[in-house]
Amino acid sequence: MSMLSDPRWSEALGHLPDYLGSHVRVSIAALALGLIVSLPLAILARHRPFLRSALLGVASIVQTVPGLALLALFYPLLLALAALSLSWFGVSFSAFGFLPAVLALALYSMLPVLRNTITGLNGVDPALTEAAEGVGMTPRQTLTMVELPLALPVIMAGIRTSAVWVIGTATLSTPIGQTSLGNYIFAGLQTQNWVLVIFGCVAAAVLALAVDQLLSLIESGIRLRSRLRMLTGALGIAILVIATLAPSFARSGTRVVVGAKTFTEQYVLAALMSQRLQAAGLASTTRQGLGSSVIYDALASGDIDVYIDYSGTLWANQFHRSEILPREQLLAELKTTLAKANITLLGELGFANAYALVMPRAKAEALGIRTAADLAARAGNMTIAGDYEFFSRPEWAGLQKAYGLSFKAQRVMQPDFMYAAVASGEVDVIAGYTSDGLIAKYDLVVLDDPRHAIPPYDAIMLLAPKRAGDETLRAALQPLLGKIDLPLMRAANLRAAANDATSSPESVARWMWEKIGK
Image 1 (tube, rainbow, N blue to C red):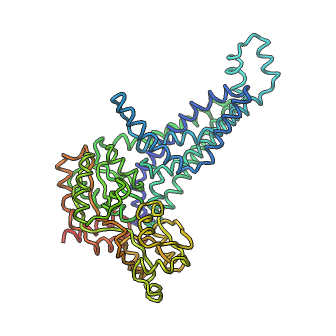
Image 2: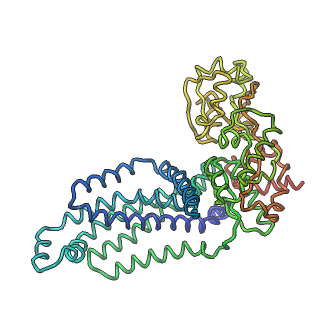
Image 3: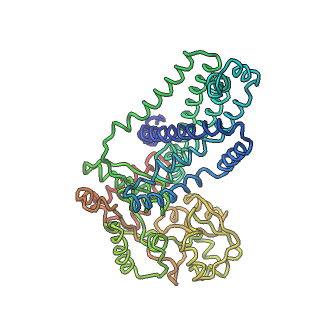
């Protein structure tokens, strides 16, 4: 099979116009905002040592903050500001995706522009500025007609560095809802589809190099005073922007936005819902790789329209309820609580995906460990691994309190890697998911929870307030409710982890629909 005939490559190419266009849009906006702020500040601070040191110090500190953390911090901040704006002025704005990404990336862009602008301006020969003053030029004329033209090559070098940083860091904006080339990378890592990971990395690198070379052409044109080079570079950037943004403008404005969290099952279910919507004639798009709190807030604010959550996650994490209720009672109370926020619980899918402590079957049998209570006596000599959220979630605190669990070490891993790690003995126990097909693949065993420290985790479909009365959308998704049992979901998750031509979320979703239809 040739590379281009491989469904994984065709899937990657199919997403390219959307992902690339969104990536360019957020990168250009962030770079433009960064330049608008940085250039005047640099000019203002160049002869003011205290202000110069303060600006460069703050910009340097921003660079030490991990990009993903900076992007994530802007989301709750803007969400709070949007709520205040709505209550005070009756006007709100979306804190999801584009705006937090632009603001965070703009901060990232500032250091090289500030530093190079100050260095370039202060590097101009003082004799030239004195000569300009001697012929009667005002300070503004000296700046615009002498200093800036002479410093422009150094300033352009800073802009080039900034552009490459912004384009690279923009791949991290996926978890806050901004579509980018990072969608390839996050989806590929979660589903172990290395084709998507490679495609995303290469596409981001090619885009960064292309923009850098075009800016280099402008820089050399300034240095050599060649208008042709400057115009060619500027025209190239304009063509790149138009070419990547054109597909976005051509798409229909009314699309159902399907959300997905950060693990394989969510990618598969999002693909399944999108396919059902498209079969009903509804245009749809997905926003993947979202954290639990981000995705719920995005639904509540109308930035996404539908997604699958789990009853225990909402109960413990979103609504901070600690009591463990019987399944039916918990669902009933959860439905009432969601209704107060105008969120519709459309129904259950038919399976539960709970957190559970998981061990290799052979090791558990050899040690006589069948339950979490049995594990507690031996945990002091063991290492446990969990996903990015687990050790900060109420479920972990509940398990520790109920069983007195205390492990020798805790490790955080990408979800699918945990199973290989526990199977190979790199860790002793993992916080796995009961619907994961990798449990059977690696011959692992789920430990019982006799004290019910972990709440029920029924998979449920939620609709945004603005979609509550959308009967067409309800009808399109209704056939999925109650039709996905635990064996089917486990089999689907196992297929999605196969890393072959049939393991993409879209392919697995089509396979699931065939099973549901039968």
